[in-house]
Length: 78
Image 1 (cartoon, rainbow, N blue to C red):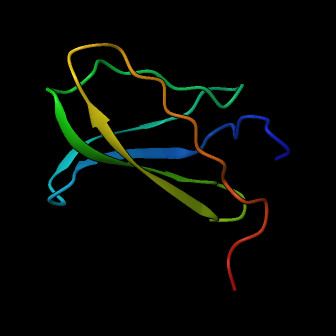
Image 2 (tube, rainbow, N blue to C red):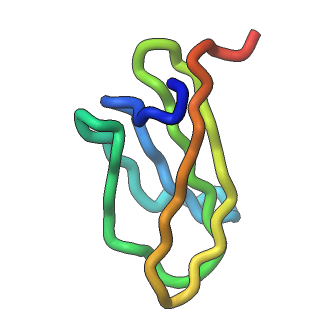
C-alpha cells in the first residue's frame, strides 16, 4: 500500500526447512513484533486480509535483533 503497513495481515514464520515456528496478526498500523527465534534461517510470509496478496522474505538470524520489512502487493497475483 505504497509503503504503508497492512493492518490485520497474517504474518507467519517458518524455518527454512518448512517447519512452522509462529504466526500472528499485524496491528492497526500494520506492524508486528515477536521474540526472535533461535539463530538460523527462516522464511517470513505475510498475507493481506482484503486481497489475499502475499509476500515472503528469506531471513538469516544471528544473536542480534532483526527488522524485516515486506511489501505486500495491493492486488493479488493473477
